[in-house]
Length: 381
Image (cartoon, rainbow, N blue to C red; front, side, top):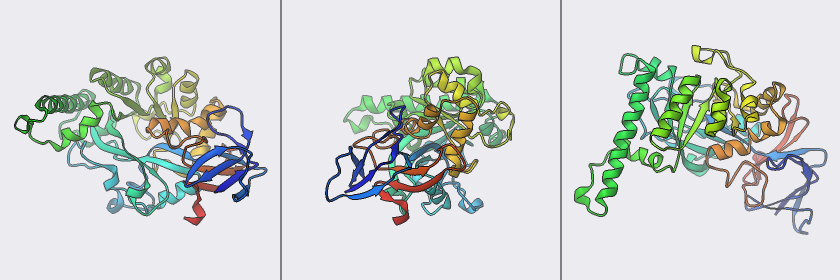
Protein backbone atom coordinates (compact mmCIF):
# COMPACT_ATOMS: atom_id res chain seq x y z
CA UNK A 1 0.00 0.00 0.00
CA UNK A 2 1.17 3.52 -0.86
CA UNK A 3 0.13 6.65 1.03
CA UNK A 4 0.71 10.21 -0.13
CA UNK A 5 0.23 12.61 2.75
CA UNK A 6 0.50 16.30 3.69
CA UNK A 7 -0.10 17.58 0.16
CA UNK A 8 -2.79 20.14 -0.65
CA UNK A 9 -5.40 18.21 -2.62
CA UNK A 10 -7.32 19.77 -5.50
CA UNK A 11 -9.72 16.92 -6.21
CA UNK A 12 -11.70 18.56 -9.10
CA UNK A 13 -14.95 17.91 -7.18
CA UNK A 14 -14.73 20.32 -4.24
CA UNK A 15 -13.91 23.94 -4.98
CA UNK A 16 -11.71 24.39 -1.91
CA UNK A 17 -8.51 22.35 -1.60
CA UNK A 18 -7.80 20.36 1.56
CA UNK A 19 -5.11 18.23 3.15
CA UNK A 20 -5.45 14.52 3.88
CA UNK A 21 -3.79 11.24 3.04
CA UNK A 22 -4.37 9.42 -0.25
CA UNK A 23 -4.30 5.63 0.22
CA UNK A 24 -3.43 3.69 -2.94
CA UNK A 25 -3.49 -0.04 -3.55
CA UNK A 26 -3.55 -2.12 -6.73
CA UNK A 27 -3.60 1.00 -8.86
CA UNK A 28 -6.70 2.45 -7.21
CA UNK A 29 -7.42 5.18 -4.67
CA UNK A 30 -8.95 3.20 -1.82
CA UNK A 31 -9.48 6.02 0.70
CA UNK A 32 -8.87 9.67 1.53
CA UNK A 33 -7.96 9.66 5.20
CA UNK A 34 -5.37 10.68 7.75
CA UNK A 35 -5.42 7.18 9.26
CA UNK A 36 -2.25 5.66 7.84
CA UNK A 37 -1.77 1.86 7.95
CA UNK A 38 1.40 0.82 9.75
CA UNK A 39 2.72 -1.20 6.80
CA UNK A 40 2.18 1.53 4.19
CA UNK A 41 4.93 3.16 2.14
CA UNK A 42 4.51 6.87 2.94
CA UNK A 43 5.36 9.69 0.54
CA UNK A 44 5.51 13.12 2.17
CA UNK A 45 4.11 15.80 -0.14
CA UNK A 46 4.46 18.71 2.30
CA UNK A 47 4.52 22.06 0.53
CA UNK A 48 3.19 20.56 -2.69
CA UNK A 49 -0.15 20.41 -4.49
CA UNK A 50 -1.86 17.27 -5.73
CA UNK A 51 -4.45 17.15 -8.48
CA UNK A 52 -5.94 14.43 -10.68
CA UNK A 53 -3.99 13.34 -13.73
CA UNK A 54 -4.86 15.63 -16.61
CA UNK A 55 -7.17 14.37 -19.34
CA UNK A 56 -7.12 15.63 -22.93
CA UNK A 57 -10.41 14.82 -24.63
CA UNK A 58 -9.23 15.59 -28.16
CA UNK A 59 -5.81 14.64 -29.52
CA UNK A 60 -4.22 12.64 -32.28
CA UNK A 61 -1.49 11.27 -30.03
CA UNK A 62 -0.13 8.01 -31.36
CA UNK A 63 -1.76 8.38 -34.78
CA UNK A 64 -0.14 11.68 -35.78
CA UNK A 65 2.71 12.32 -33.43
CA UNK A 66 6.10 13.89 -32.95
CA UNK A 67 8.92 13.86 -35.49
CA UNK A 68 7.13 11.88 -38.19
CA UNK A 69 6.40 12.33 -41.87
CA UNK A 70 3.87 10.66 -44.12
CA UNK A 71 5.16 7.25 -43.06
CA UNK A 72 4.04 7.76 -39.47
CA UNK A 73 0.92 9.85 -40.01
CA UNK A 74 -2.08 7.55 -39.70
CA UNK A 75 -5.00 9.72 -38.65
CA UNK A 76 -6.77 10.48 -41.95
CA UNK A 77 -7.81 7.83 -44.48
CA UNK A 78 -8.24 9.75 -47.73
CA UNK A 79 -9.69 7.02 -49.96
CA UNK A 80 -13.31 7.57 -48.87
CA UNK A 81 -15.22 10.30 -47.05
CA UNK A 82 -17.32 7.77 -45.10
CA UNK A 83 -15.10 5.49 -42.99
CA UNK A 84 -16.97 4.66 -39.76
CA UNK A 85 -15.37 1.19 -39.70
CA UNK A 86 -11.91 2.58 -38.93
CA UNK A 87 -10.63 2.15 -35.35
CA UNK A 88 -8.07 4.34 -33.62
CA UNK A 89 -6.47 1.40 -31.86
CA UNK A 90 -5.31 -0.03 -35.20
CA UNK A 91 -3.16 3.04 -35.87
CA UNK A 92 -1.92 3.96 -32.40
CA UNK A 93 1.82 3.66 -31.86
CA UNK A 94 2.60 3.51 -28.11
CA UNK A 95 6.20 4.47 -28.86
CA UNK A 96 5.19 7.81 -30.37
CA UNK A 97 7.24 10.32 -28.30
CA UNK A 98 4.01 12.29 -27.81
CA UNK A 99 2.95 9.79 -25.14
CA UNK A 100 6.11 10.47 -23.13
CA UNK A 101 5.69 14.23 -23.55
CA UNK A 102 2.11 13.92 -22.32
CA UNK A 103 2.76 11.85 -19.21
CA UNK A 104 5.79 13.84 -18.05
CA UNK A 105 3.57 16.93 -18.24
CA UNK A 106 0.91 15.24 -16.10
CA UNK A 107 -1.46 14.20 -18.90
CA UNK A 108 -2.35 10.67 -17.88
CA UNK A 109 -5.22 9.92 -20.28
CA UNK A 110 -5.83 11.00 -23.87
CA UNK A 111 -8.63 10.50 -26.32
CA UNK A 112 -7.26 9.91 -29.79
CA UNK A 113 -8.48 8.84 -33.19
CA UNK A 114 -9.19 9.73 -36.80
CA UNK A 115 -8.89 13.32 -37.98
CA UNK A 116 -11.39 15.63 -39.64
CA UNK A 117 -10.80 15.06 -43.35
CA UNK A 118 -13.76 12.71 -43.65
CA UNK A 119 -17.45 13.35 -43.17
CA UNK A 120 -17.47 10.32 -40.88
CA UNK A 121 -13.97 9.35 -39.86
CA UNK A 122 -14.10 6.38 -37.50
CA UNK A 123 -13.95 5.22 -33.91
CA UNK A 124 -12.07 7.03 -31.12
CA UNK A 125 -10.52 5.43 -28.05
CA UNK A 126 -9.27 6.62 -24.65
CA UNK A 127 -5.77 5.52 -23.63
CA UNK A 128 -3.50 5.89 -20.64
CA UNK A 129 -0.26 7.57 -21.67
CA UNK A 130 2.07 4.82 -20.48
CA UNK A 131 2.56 1.34 -21.90
CA UNK A 132 4.02 -0.68 -24.74
CA UNK A 133 0.80 -2.19 -26.11
CA UNK A 134 -2.16 -0.12 -27.25
CA UNK A 135 -4.50 -2.88 -26.08
CA UNK A 136 -3.11 -2.69 -22.55
CA UNK A 137 -3.31 1.12 -22.49
CA UNK A 138 -7.04 1.30 -23.25
CA UNK A 139 -9.27 3.02 -20.73
CA UNK A 140 -12.37 2.69 -22.89
CA UNK A 141 -12.99 1.59 -26.48
CA UNK A 142 -15.00 2.87 -28.23
CA UNK A 143 -15.70 6.33 -26.83
CA UNK A 144 -17.08 8.11 -29.90
CA UNK A 145 -17.59 8.15 -33.66
CA UNK A 146 -15.77 11.02 -35.34
CA UNK A 147 -17.56 13.19 -37.87
CA UNK A 148 -16.62 16.55 -39.36
CA UNK A 149 -18.31 19.72 -40.52
CA UNK A 150 -16.96 22.84 -42.19
CA UNK A 151 -13.90 23.41 -44.31
CA UNK A 152 -11.92 20.19 -43.91
CA UNK A 153 -14.19 17.72 -45.75
CA UNK A 154 -14.83 20.39 -48.41
CA UNK A 155 -11.11 20.93 -48.93
CA UNK A 156 -10.22 17.24 -49.15
CA UNK A 157 -13.16 16.01 -51.24
CA UNK A 158 -14.07 19.06 -53.30
CA UNK A 159 -13.66 17.08 -56.55
CA UNK A 160 -14.98 13.81 -55.12
CA UNK A 161 -18.53 14.59 -54.04
CA UNK A 162 -18.31 17.24 -51.32
CA UNK A 163 -17.98 20.81 -52.51
CA UNK A 164 -20.38 22.55 -50.11
CA UNK A 165 -21.35 22.39 -46.46
CA UNK A 166 -24.80 21.14 -47.39
CA UNK A 167 -23.40 18.21 -49.37
CA UNK A 168 -21.20 17.22 -46.44
CA UNK A 169 -24.22 17.28 -44.12
CA UNK A 170 -26.16 15.23 -46.68
CA UNK A 171 -23.45 12.56 -46.76
CA UNK A 172 -23.59 12.24 -42.97
CA UNK A 173 -27.39 12.01 -43.04
CA UNK A 174 -27.25 9.37 -45.78
CA UNK A 175 -24.91 7.22 -43.69
CA UNK A 176 -27.07 7.61 -40.60
CA UNK A 177 -30.30 6.88 -42.47
CA UNK A 178 -28.90 3.79 -44.21
CA UNK A 179 -27.45 2.52 -40.93
CA UNK A 180 -30.77 3.09 -39.16
CA UNK A 181 -32.59 1.04 -41.80
CA UNK A 182 -29.95 -1.68 -41.49
CA UNK A 183 -30.37 -1.81 -37.71
CA UNK A 184 -34.16 -1.95 -37.99
CA UNK A 185 -33.91 -4.91 -40.38
CA UNK A 186 -31.54 -6.71 -38.02
CA UNK A 187 -33.86 -6.15 -35.07
CA UNK A 188 -36.92 -7.23 -37.07
CA UNK A 189 -35.14 -10.42 -38.14
CA UNK A 190 -34.72 -11.51 -34.53
CA UNK A 191 -33.22 -15.00 -34.42
CA UNK A 192 -34.12 -15.81 -38.03
CA UNK A 193 -30.87 -15.70 -40.07
CA UNK A 194 -32.80 -15.86 -43.35
CA UNK A 195 -34.25 -12.43 -42.67
CA UNK A 196 -30.96 -10.80 -41.71
CA UNK A 197 -29.66 -8.10 -44.07
CA UNK A 198 -26.33 -8.75 -45.75
CA UNK A 199 -23.48 -7.87 -43.40
CA UNK A 200 -22.28 -4.29 -43.90
CA UNK A 201 -19.06 -3.33 -42.13
CA UNK A 202 -19.72 0.43 -42.21
CA UNK A 203 -23.30 0.18 -40.99
CA UNK A 204 -22.32 -2.22 -38.22
CA UNK A 205 -19.85 0.39 -36.97
CA UNK A 206 -22.64 2.97 -36.77
CA UNK A 207 -24.91 0.83 -34.57
CA UNK A 208 -23.40 1.99 -31.23
CA UNK A 209 -24.08 5.57 -32.32
CA UNK A 210 -27.70 4.85 -33.21
CA UNK A 211 -28.19 2.99 -29.92
CA UNK A 212 -26.75 6.00 -28.05
CA UNK A 213 -23.97 3.90 -26.58
CA UNK A 214 -21.39 6.40 -27.86
CA UNK A 215 -21.74 9.95 -29.19
CA UNK A 216 -20.96 11.49 -32.51
CA UNK A 217 -17.76 13.46 -31.95
CA UNK A 218 -18.42 16.43 -34.22
CA UNK A 219 -15.52 18.55 -35.47
CA UNK A 220 -17.05 22.02 -35.84
CA UNK A 221 -15.32 25.40 -35.59
CA UNK A 222 -17.76 27.85 -37.15
CA UNK A 223 -21.05 28.72 -35.44
CA UNK A 224 -23.24 27.52 -38.31
CA UNK A 225 -21.34 24.21 -38.45
CA UNK A 226 -21.81 23.72 -34.71
CA UNK A 227 -25.54 24.20 -35.16
CA UNK A 228 -25.66 21.83 -38.14
CA UNK A 229 -24.10 19.12 -35.97
CA UNK A 230 -26.77 19.75 -33.33
CA UNK A 231 -29.51 19.70 -35.97
CA UNK A 232 -28.44 16.29 -37.27
CA UNK A 233 -28.02 14.84 -33.77
CA UNK A 234 -31.59 15.87 -32.97
CA UNK A 235 -32.97 14.49 -36.24
CA UNK A 236 -31.58 11.03 -35.45
CA UNK A 237 -31.87 11.26 -31.64
CA UNK A 238 -28.14 10.82 -31.07
CA UNK A 239 -25.67 11.63 -28.35
CA UNK A 240 -23.24 14.35 -29.42
CA UNK A 241 -20.05 16.02 -28.29
CA UNK A 242 -18.90 19.21 -29.98
CA UNK A 243 -15.21 19.47 -30.80
CA UNK A 244 -13.16 22.70 -31.16
CA UNK A 245 -16.20 25.03 -30.84
CA UNK A 246 -14.04 27.96 -31.98
CA UNK A 247 -17.02 30.28 -32.44
CA UNK A 248 -18.92 28.88 -29.48
CA UNK A 249 -18.75 32.19 -27.65
CA UNK A 250 -20.83 33.73 -30.45
CA UNK A 251 -23.71 31.33 -29.70
CA UNK A 252 -23.08 30.74 -25.99
CA UNK A 253 -26.73 31.13 -24.97
CA UNK A 254 -27.80 28.50 -27.51
CA UNK A 255 -25.08 26.06 -26.46
CA UNK A 256 -25.97 26.51 -22.79
CA UNK A 257 -29.56 25.60 -23.58
CA UNK A 258 -28.60 22.58 -25.70
CA UNK A 259 -26.21 21.29 -23.00
CA UNK A 260 -23.89 19.17 -25.14
CA UNK A 261 -20.32 18.53 -23.89
CA UNK A 262 -17.88 21.01 -25.45
CA UNK A 263 -14.18 20.48 -26.19
CA UNK A 264 -12.61 23.91 -26.78
CA UNK A 265 -9.31 24.24 -28.62
CA UNK A 266 -6.67 24.24 -29.90
CA UNK A 267 -6.26 27.94 -29.18
CA UNK A 268 -2.48 28.37 -29.11
CA UNK A 269 -2.14 28.52 -32.89
CA UNK A 270 -2.89 31.09 -35.55
CA UNK A 271 -6.07 31.31 -37.61
CA UNK A 272 -4.83 29.13 -40.45
CA UNK A 273 -8.18 29.08 -42.26
CA UNK A 274 -11.30 31.28 -42.43
CA UNK A 275 -13.35 29.27 -39.91
CA UNK A 276 -10.74 30.05 -37.23
CA UNK A 277 -10.83 33.82 -37.57
CA UNK A 278 -12.75 34.29 -34.30
CA UNK A 279 -10.44 32.10 -32.21
CA UNK A 280 -10.14 33.46 -28.65
CA UNK A 281 -8.84 32.46 -25.21
CA UNK A 282 -12.10 33.89 -23.85
CA UNK A 283 -14.26 31.19 -25.46
CA UNK A 284 -13.84 28.53 -22.76
CA UNK A 285 -14.61 30.96 -19.94
CA UNK A 286 -17.63 32.47 -21.66
CA UNK A 287 -19.11 29.02 -22.23
CA UNK A 288 -18.30 27.79 -18.71
CA UNK A 289 -19.83 30.92 -17.20
CA UNK A 290 -23.03 30.10 -19.10
CA UNK A 291 -23.12 26.68 -17.44
CA UNK A 292 -21.71 24.59 -20.30
CA UNK A 293 -19.52 21.57 -19.56
CA UNK A 294 -16.23 22.70 -21.08
CA UNK A 295 -13.05 20.73 -21.68
CA UNK A 296 -9.87 22.47 -22.79
CA UNK A 297 -8.08 20.44 -25.47
CA UNK A 298 -4.81 20.63 -27.37
CA UNK A 299 -5.65 18.69 -30.55
CA UNK A 300 -2.03 17.51 -30.34
CA UNK A 301 0.09 17.73 -32.47
CA UNK A 302 -1.65 20.90 -33.65
CA UNK A 303 -0.71 22.44 -30.32
CA UNK A 304 1.62 20.83 -27.82
CA UNK A 305 0.03 18.50 -25.28
CA UNK A 306 2.90 19.28 -22.88
CA UNK A 307 1.34 22.65 -22.14
CA UNK A 308 -2.27 21.64 -21.45
CA UNK A 309 -2.38 23.23 -17.94
CA UNK A 310 -0.71 26.37 -19.29
CA UNK A 311 -3.47 26.65 -21.91
CA UNK A 312 -5.95 26.47 -19.05
CA UNK A 313 -3.99 29.29 -17.43
CA UNK A 314 -4.43 31.48 -20.51
CA UNK A 315 -8.18 30.84 -20.26
CA UNK A 316 -8.09 31.93 -16.60
CA UNK A 317 -6.17 35.05 -17.60
CA UNK A 318 -8.97 35.84 -20.07
CA UNK A 319 -11.80 35.43 -17.57
CA UNK A 320 -12.34 31.74 -16.84
CA UNK A 321 -12.87 30.79 -13.21
CA UNK A 322 -9.82 28.89 -11.91
CA UNK A 323 -11.87 25.98 -10.56
CA UNK A 324 -13.70 25.71 -13.89
CA UNK A 325 -10.30 25.62 -15.59
CA UNK A 326 -9.14 22.79 -13.33
CA UNK A 327 -12.30 20.84 -14.12
CA UNK A 328 -11.75 21.56 -17.83
CA UNK A 329 -8.54 19.49 -17.84
CA UNK A 330 -9.65 16.78 -15.39
CA UNK A 331 -13.21 15.72 -14.59
CA UNK A 332 -14.97 17.43 -17.52
CA UNK A 333 -12.90 15.72 -20.22
CA UNK A 334 -13.26 12.45 -18.31
CA UNK A 335 -17.03 12.85 -18.62
CA UNK A 336 -16.68 14.02 -22.22
CA UNK A 337 -15.01 10.72 -23.17
CA UNK A 338 -17.25 8.50 -21.00
CA UNK A 339 -14.47 7.60 -18.55
CA UNK A 340 -15.54 9.49 -15.42
CA UNK A 341 -16.03 6.22 -13.54
CA UNK A 342 -12.26 5.71 -13.57
CA UNK A 343 -10.45 9.01 -14.04
CA UNK A 344 -10.72 12.79 -13.74
CA UNK A 345 -10.95 13.35 -9.98
CA UNK A 346 -9.39 12.28 -6.69
CA UNK A 347 -12.00 9.99 -5.16
CA UNK A 348 -12.05 6.56 -3.57
CA UNK A 349 -12.52 3.87 -6.19
CA UNK A 350 -10.90 5.76 -9.05
CA UNK A 351 -7.62 5.04 -10.79
CA UNK A 352 -4.66 6.47 -8.88
CA UNK A 353 -3.66 8.94 -11.60
CA UNK A 354 -2.13 11.90 -9.80
CA UNK A 355 0.06 14.94 -10.42
CA UNK A 356 2.22 16.25 -7.57
CA UNK A 357 3.48 19.73 -8.29
CA UNK A 358 4.81 22.92 -6.77
CA UNK A 359 3.55 26.40 -7.59
CA UNK A 360 0.54 27.65 -9.53
CA UNK A 361 -0.81 24.82 -11.67
CA UNK A 362 -1.64 27.18 -14.52
CA UNK A 363 1.75 28.89 -14.62
CA UNK A 364 4.58 27.97 -16.96
CA UNK A 365 6.82 28.28 -13.88
CA UNK A 366 5.10 25.48 -11.95
CA UNK A 367 7.21 22.39 -11.31
CA UNK A 368 5.84 18.87 -11.62
CA UNK A 369 7.63 16.65 -9.11
CA UNK A 370 5.87 13.34 -9.68
CA UNK A 371 3.20 11.80 -11.88
CA UNK A 372 1.42 8.57 -10.99
CA UNK A 373 -0.52 6.45 -13.47
CA UNK A 374 -2.48 3.53 -12.03
CA UNK A 375 -0.70 4.07 -8.72
CA UNK A 376 2.80 3.81 -10.13
CA UNK A 377 5.30 6.62 -10.54
CA UNK A 378 5.95 7.07 -14.25
CA UNK A 379 9.69 7.16 -13.58
CA UNK A 380 9.41 3.49 -12.62
CA UNK A 381 7.46 2.50 -15.74
